[in-house]
Image 1 (spheres, chains in turn brown, red):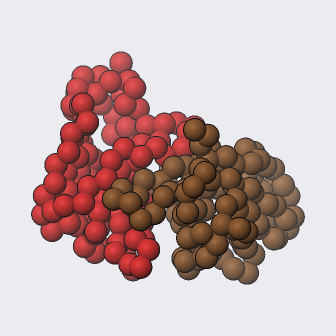
Image 2: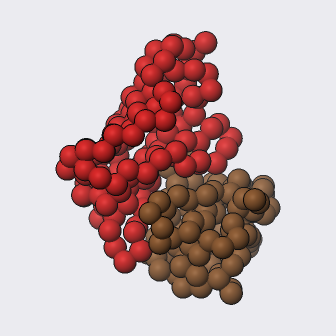
Length: 115
Length: 112
């Protein structure tokens, strides 16, 4: 079974440039999460989708970040414009919510460096 | 809002020694999950605890959920170099969609 796929794995951009990350969750998983992880810290939720609906985007900086999950499958996270402080690893995770165990399966992440 | 804390932040142990990390929530949790992240890797699910006072074991790992469902611990017996990594607890808060908040993690180093 294929795991969560993310691309690109690494991205280096200059500040004020736009950047986009893509995530394909495990087949059949209805819940998709985007997290931001800074070095030495735990994942911080940016947005959570249940199918196509964003059920929690309270921590998403909406002035520069946007996300979509068309057709309730794969998802894109965009930053425009990027700032120096956005340098971090962006993790995508998926789960099959509604079962007894809400295990999250994480992708390898995209490491973003903003110069 | 809900906060999840973990101590210690770092732990260095000699191979064969035991290790424990503690997780505390500012609110009562519906469940607690534990994840392990190897250096350069991504978090991998270890276990979920749901019941008050629950204790679960996975080989050398013992997980406990507090009676008040506000704290949890992970204990590793006789650490091995393969145990190296960062251990995160993730507290589940009962909302319409089971909100989960990750703690800052405990980084474990094992000296051979």
